[in-house]
Length: 331
Ligand code: UT7
Image 1 (cartoon, protein in one colour):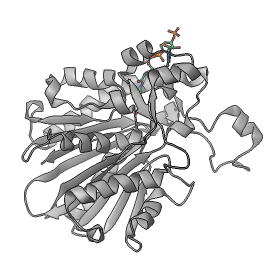
Image 2 (cartoon, protein in one colour; image 1 turned 180 degrees about the horizontal axis):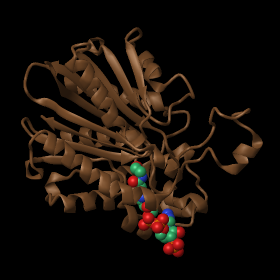
Image 3 (cartoon, helix red, strand yellow; image 1 turned 45 degrees about the vertical axis):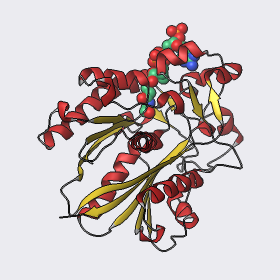
Image 4 (cartoon, protein in one colour; image 1 turned 135 degrees about the vertical axis):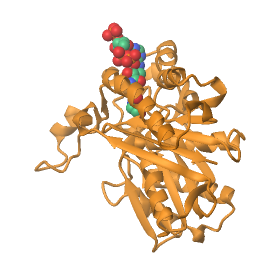
């Protein structure tokens, strides 16, 4: 059976840097609270008219393809993870496919929020393992800033979420390295703890002045509930991946957790007794970019030379759904 190897990684973040001080000018918050509770110093918010969900994905993909040293035409399938597509439908996968000039190949959209990139990676891995496709582009891209309630009422979410895109090129290999396993979970009992309710389809009219007035199209998060579940599920799903591969937490060379909150990452690091150099965080600069956070972090870590041949890389995520997931990769 073939294995899937990540041969290139790329990312793109909007030029527009929003600092904590910038936020404190529009909502009742302050740098000290945000840094202490989330670890975030600044984030990127898209520039209307410049950035779109699909074209941020395209830019990340182009970087990944260039770093992989392949021709774009070698890509035979696309998996695009996002919960903030440019259109209600079709998904961003086909829009990015068009921008890359890859019309004709399959393009699949994944809506699993913060776990979306790992779900996408898992699907791409299954297609490669069964030899259906050879070279797959996997992208995570989000524009969350336009769904944030930027009034005082929404301050606990609006200081966290941000925009960006990351991409990975997966290719079939006969080597024993590559993606060792992926582990996917969900529990719909908690669907409304972190969600955007409208414009939902189960209404006579999807948009109305009353709906707009109610703010139900903004992101709603019960931060405390999400936090409590996240710290448990992150550890569980990492241990599940290690046990599946008969490996120990001490075998991990680099853990790249979804960048949800620096306190969550630090808590997992403590639970797993991993030293600082074995956990990669960049939430300080980019905030929480949902499905884009893991590929942006992986791309940065790889660019900095922190991921080397033979390393054991662990990815883990938790988010809306609730969904949670992990992946172990032998680089
Ligand atoms: O991406 C995956 C899913 N998302 C996550 O994993 C996020 C998980 N949750 C969290 O990261 C945290 O729950 C938050 C960062 C969202 C909130 O932090 P918290 O420590 O849980 O704060 P809290 O909501 O319990 O609020 C504590 C206090 C409250 O004031 P009182 O009632 O104690 O007087 C809030 O009103 O902090 C206040 N507060 C703020 N103050 C200044 C909430 N947001 C802010 C803010 N600035 N932005």
